[in-house]
Amino acid sequence: LTAASAYYNRGILYDKKNNTIGAIEDYTKSIELNPKYPQAYNNRGNSYGDLNKQNEAIADYTKAIELDPKHSNAYYNRGVSSDKLMKYDEAIADYSKAISIDPNNAYTYYNKGISLDRKGDFNQAITCFS
Image (cartoon, rainbow, N blue to C red; front, side, top):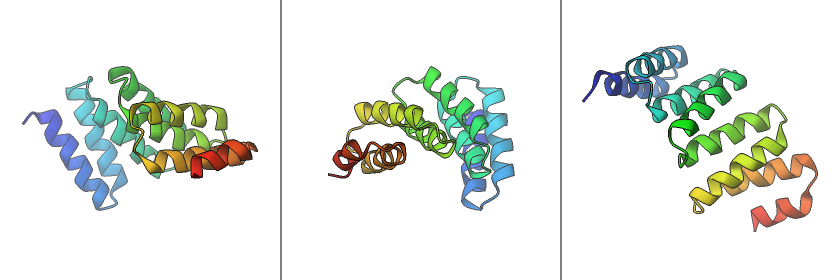
């Protein structure tokens, strides 16, 4: 177990206790110790999202994707943050990429459908819910 992993795991526990600031601090320390740790960027992004800091979240998801282009959760999470910023085309593109990596995640289809609906593309939204 590395120190980066220890901070990462403690960050997860802080998240479970709704200590978002503590989680961000530990994910940040984990990243400082191992800057090539995509899961730490992804989870810190989730914590930023919990604080409604969507731009910071998107930056972390983007870094996670740079480090691991097959990180379907990072694409999904970046889609969620983009949707919250009403950047529906970006959200839809990320959900589509997540689906191409992990076609069995029903949440991704659901959220893609929501973004399509918000964009006004009802027919495509229907296919996501089918």
